[in-house]
Image (cartoon, rainbow, N blue to C red):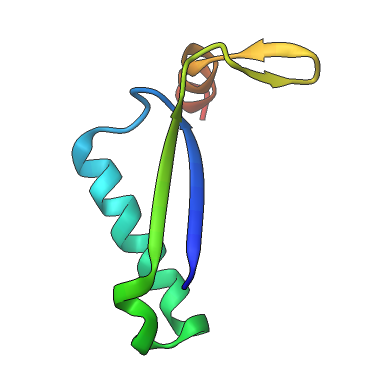
Length: 72
């Protein structure tokens, strides 16, 4: 059974976005594992508390993600 784990900051996605992500990732995986495994394909979204993620020795949080998003 395929199991895909995605780590996101807590509150980064709305409920609708989470549902869309689960659907879209499942659709991306199925061509590689076969349609027969659709009902056994698990997508797990783990929410990490903002500031509990480190990049390059620095704490990284949801506000940093939002700053990146707004600069593009």
